[in-house]
Length: 158
Length: 103
Image (spheres, one colour):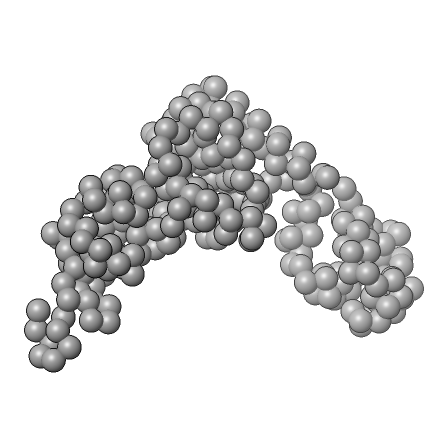
């Protein structure tokens, strides 16, 4: 999903997004339906990832979770990230990418318009959630190594 | 903003007058009027619940609107600790969100 598409979706749900010049370590901020994205983020891919995570906060977080040394706040951070992973690199997207001939993590990042770190995080998350592989329709996604296998409709063999 | 003001504003936004709203919420008009005049803290709790229920908000949401404070805040950030400058940036952000809400 492109940056513009996410922006559109967000404004549809009443979230206001602004790009502001901020300190380099802060990527994005979220509070009560307002999002600030750091203007200095160099690539569209990284911006998309940041925006998706902040939107994740909009849909899943509650309370002040700035202090990430507290475990309950970390849990909410994880949930927001999980939301972003599902949106940007969900199983359907992985299948679509492999159908288009994407074969490695670099190509996948390019295809889905996200950063490689983000893909890394997503794979880790899916591994925690589904185990080493995940079946969806006629496909089987393995997370280690990352690959999509097509299950033939006749025999059920790979 | 006081709680009663918040409630009054929300009732206004429904487009109903106070009397019709009171009927819909299932409490006498005079009761609602005195709630709005004397303040929510002096009203019976079941009446406050009725009013909030009809407005489609929770009691917490009423409190939050009345206090005008920020409810949910999160940051995407490298590292765990915050520098002075970064905290200042967050303060600016909070100020921005508050000023936006008052409009």
